[in-house]
Length: 255
Length: 106
Image (cartoon, rainbow over all chains, first blue to last red; front, top):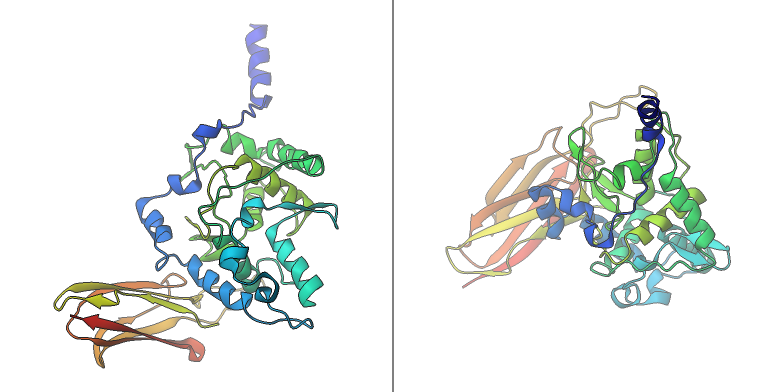
């Protein structure tokens, strides 16, 4: 009797942080309904393409005191940016830490273009990010963890596996252990960041992975980190590694 | 930035039914919401969409609050003659967007 009692007490506190086997991983796309998939598949109905087109215009527009456009250094994004987004977040040796694509774009703006950084979630930053990432559509995610990124990667993985918030839930409990089941009316996905920035129907607009992560933090009643926090970048690094080999779909549509 | 996208076949057979898809970047603010401080957010929507085929109106839609942001409007028409198909969206705060596409009917 005592054994049963102890088992009941301790069983729920044990975390089964088993990672999903590589062959069983599925993009959020596969959990969507037929109509939402069709919306994403056709560039003329995918509202994310409105941002991509804006991003293309921004890519070619001279900006800042440097009088440079992105195209001034990088030329045609269709060749120069192909596969780039599949490698982010990437280690920045000057800063000594991994940075995501938003931060890379803003670093380029301040160092090369001598322009003011774009605000997180601003239309322009989302547009350039979407345009750059769009060039990697169909490219497998390729995140290599080395001794420089290892501490940040480990911190990200810890965040993913740590219970937090008033609901005392870890990311892994939904997205590793219970994917495919229902959370209210929605199917729990595996949380692979394959399509960011995404057009989320709930948002009626485009948003970054950090915006989506903040939604989950608020969902478990935890206080979200501010935009650009290193904790978020570390978590992004872990999530991208977790989705390694899966292809990018940007701009994805999600419910 | 006013941004619209239209998609239709560049060429069609006479009498063929073609599908036209249009997408307009617009927040479609309903006018029923308020800020966290209680200030009402004024309505800002596209209220009218008109499509003309060689000057003749072939499709018209009146939009109202509760239409989603970035409205996607898709419809069909019969390809009758070569020419231009023109699109015009008008809305609150002087919003006007136009786009046109050529079609060759053989």
